[in-house]
Length: 409
Image 1 (cartoon, rainbow, N blue to C red):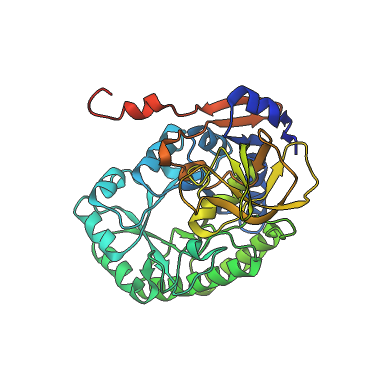
Image 2 (image 1 turned 90 degrees about the vertical axis):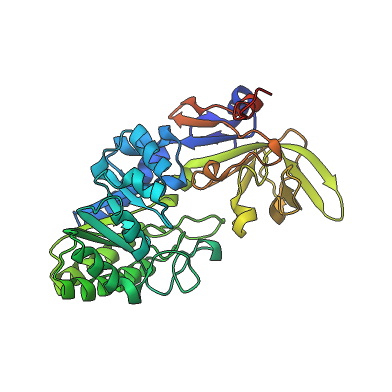
């Protein structure tokens, strides 16, 4: 692999150094168009909100804002980022968890769509302001994700109102003067099976129907979350998003008719599907060690791409100008942790010090999870637009860190 979009990787490494994150603007745009078209052709009142936590670079957010996408924020600062990127409040969704009074104070009077994590969230919110519109995140008692660490519903999950308590939550909100309602569910991330999404929509609509019919509520929106997966392994099949859109819309419409909901807004919260395959982490080989196993060390580690160490995720890699995968190595970084291993026993070309190694599918949950662990400075981010490229966040410097101290160092 020598190019990202129409730009030579060696040119990028020479100008910006390594490691560096690189994003392909056209892929962001194409991913959004494909997802949007797959749903609106079957249900016109579908709205997509990009999950800001997946990639919060303001310049990336601007790409989605310019296309008419909404934003899904999970913290007050993500809300601030969305505003800086130009999103208006009517296109911002706020889905926090274990929200502090300070968190709620930031968003309580902003007239956002609020997906509250618990009944207690609403009680804390009431002390600040009772909004006109409220939604609760429902935990249906089961979930599924590409890894255990990204399964976000079920009896072991920390998220949402247990569905057995959902009626109590909505009754309290209505009795407290809330006039407008939505409902939300997010059961897991990186799912690749269309039938799964139809299944969770059917479950959510059943829960919503029982609650809202009894309380005489017509929901304004039904938020089915994200979770739309991408393949991280060669040979792994893509999610058939056209089939997903058709099946979800059919189940959604059937249930809307069954429960008398009319045609509420259908909200999606994708992050990975829109950004994942549009991003790359470009690194350099720093050392090759013949130990009990062969280790190839890179100038990026778990401090810059955490997913493999955090929950065993895998990212494919490509070596600049080399395509003959002939030897088995352990691929690692420079961090002083034995968990700083990207992949064990991975097939690689024979590499040399200085070779460029590029991680694929690093556009979501990449830079946003990076840290200064071992006091290594976070890399720059580059955006490619056709054959042009620009730095959209510079490389961090040690002076940036020193400036955080109260006394001059």
